[in-house]
Image (cartoon, rainbow, N blue to C red; front, side, top):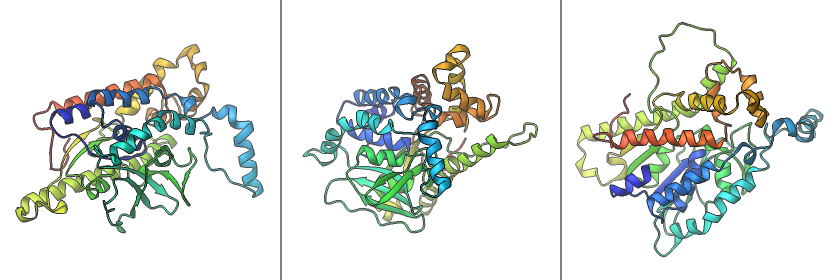
Length: 368
């Protein structure tokens, strides 16, 4: 409901920037930008609801003798190496089915005689550990300069499903994707919420949609407990996916406050000398989405129903069904229509709460 709301308030988005799952959304929304906002939003949601585990990766148990064991054997013998823990051979066909039919509309929306999309950008991490921002935009526009301090490089490209696959290739779990001469993995490894590229590409207002809150959690007053492997993995993921985003949001708010305090009216027309107002839509806690994944899993795969997806049951058991944080880990691979629908409803509730607030737009530091 966020895009329709923005359009109703004469703030129709024209620059779409995304990382990982956000890259999928960026391409989808850019491709349907010429449609009625409600129709376009429903097309995007339908694409997400169509995903299932088997449309993303093969059963790890079933692929063990034919793929996993031979790959490890080649690595031990020194004649090969393991590139991913999951067999994602179904994923390219799924991406083609969902995204390729939208490419002509995407090209027209960006490069047609009446373009409605100013820029589309997807973010990936290259094999030199730099962030590459692939930018699709009309001829005549210039790319932003590279940011050596943040190791961000901009590259002009006609965005395709392969760019989206590269941006969402979870390291170790999914294989890297080759684009040109380089290999790419998930952009969220280094830049989970691409605020800086969006501003560099000309955005004067930001709508930030995230899977984590924009603030650090409050101190936990619960009783101390021994931390285990699951806790360690969850903490590592949070440091990569959440902490950098929180710091970027804090930086944006602090920069806005500094500009406002300095009263630089003479430079307000300069992009880096003006306040950037934003809307932030995300969960209330870091584990809210993971908690929903855990709840949906228990509803969908309890008792005999566990046989429908034995791999998920095995993963759930290996992590530990009673472990704190099991839902956070499960959510990264839980490509299930029921969970997708639940996550969509959760996102709509967050967006509704923000847009119905007295002043949804802000320029200051994010608060709890």
